Image 1 (cartoon, rainbow, N blue to C red):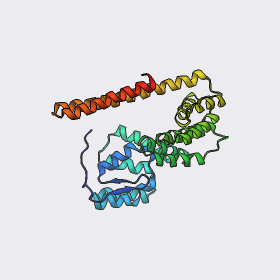
Image 2 (image 1 turned 135 degrees about the vertical axis):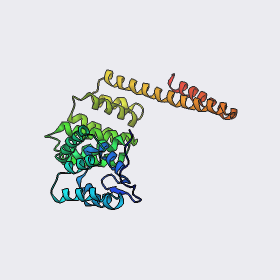
Image 3 (image 1 turned 60 degrees about the vertical axis):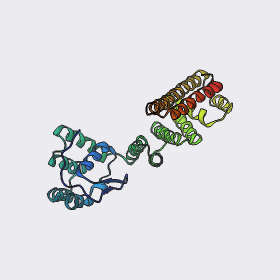
Image 4 (image 1 turned 120 degrees about the horizontal axis):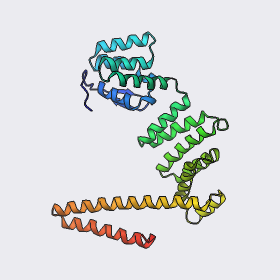
Length: 276
């Protein structure tokens, strides 16, 4: 999608403190709003934004109008939609969709706001920040009164910690989540996977017995893990062979032979260990 450039590009960024994102133009600001609509903090879009519009982007009329809406008590959703409408950055249909989302965000509980931020950071691979947001959201929940929501947050924590290779900690999160929401098969699958990665050798099977997890269930999860591992191997092998062919086409036959032999060696070692 192509957007019309409006105003100047600032030499210094407008910083959105909540995510420490630097914005240099109106187009970047609108893109950020659209992509993160459910995690915007109205405090980040107050008078500093007025100065950014008026002094750095050289859009004084837009800055004055935005400031008057702040002083007049207009809602955050109305202020943002005014910017979108005045600059014709979005059509009426999209503006109304964003208005609904922004209004929903304004009435979101603290717990939901932190959960949404956690989801955003997790999808953005900003894992320590995701853990912090999920932890904060979890601290605002009564686990006895809302066990399903607590389980969801614990699962988010487990996912983030597993991505950071902290499998033992992730396993504890999935244990808590499964105890709170025992009927959820997805949580049980994650618990089994974390246990396989975090518990060495035969200890895994003892753990399955302690948790009274049926053999057919954990066997199914282990098989899926093996298939995923094979796919990752094949993907890496294909990438190495492709790079080797490229080097051969460029006349680097020695480099090609080295990569090819490395892949063959990997295949041999893999077969010795797994038989596949």
